[in-house]
Image 1 (tube, rainbow, N blue to C red):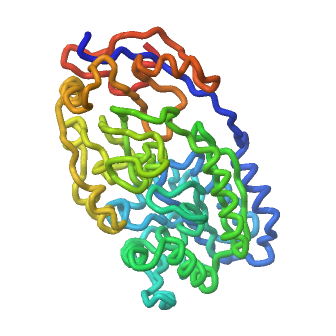
Image 2: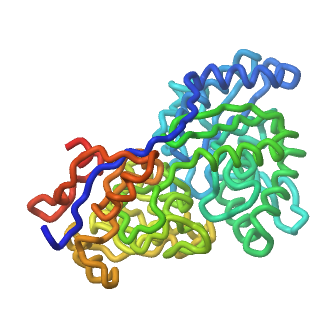
Image 3: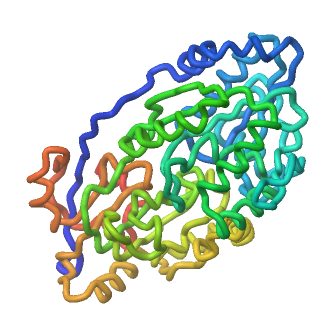
Length: 426
């Protein structure tokens, strides 16, 4: 198969920290906040549940529920996810349940609505929205993962602060906040809205989760509201140090088996693919510098939401058939990233895409193309790459060759296995 690169399997070695007992960590952390001083028997407590595929999120939310119940409170869960789920209460409830957070598992009600209460006018002159059910509760507990945002850079990115505006602001809030971010900045709007929410919406605690390089829970920390901003800055630095990465500076062709909202807000994490500031190339000192990306499928949990696929140049035609254009466009327009909804060039088979790539990478011979194949941007501990990286892998202590070099495993139809794991385990 001289027309295509030969490949081999690679394992990255990470120094990973892991939380072995997420439920126990949530309980012990919340206990330090002495919430019994605020939550009285019979008080209602709204707990936020987002749309990301966060490791152990169902376990963490249930542990929050159980802690509130021990205090005599009456907890319930609210989907906190802007415009996701097609911007409908039913769609957002389905996302929460899809992560295992059913009422039966949680032991409390799920209250889903797109209605919001206008809390006040922010200093910048726009209304501050807050989930109607959360507003009517006596107290609110916010839970989210702390990690780098896929579009915005700063000392506060994705976490508890963002959850209080984009998540609990629902579609109404997300629309106006993203518009305001265009006129001001992400950092300013996050702080402006969070200040009003913390002052007026009954937030009594936050549970912050940080993940390691294997997409497992590394740390659980409960925060008092007055500590949200200062501690989130510190946890973001930690989260960035734990981020997985594609360990090469340059990639001519990156194949990604699946993308979706459960993987990243942008479907595929721009911090991993090197496209945080420009949809189609790395800028500044971003790495890897990826020339072409191909999306091979969507995750089932994303329910057809292909937000972010506009950052890929190519996709399998089956992806086009899986996409729910309506919910994808709603999400991208609401988020102010319209180009993320644009359709890549699609082909029925992987072989056809490779044929186009070989014509489009300049003077590089087909067998020398720098090719990387991953499952998704959360799962890069093991992957497949082309023979052109062989010497580099051997020179690095953090990378290990775990297979012989072999031909790309195309089937009779011209397709690779659906998932790189199938090739890794072959």
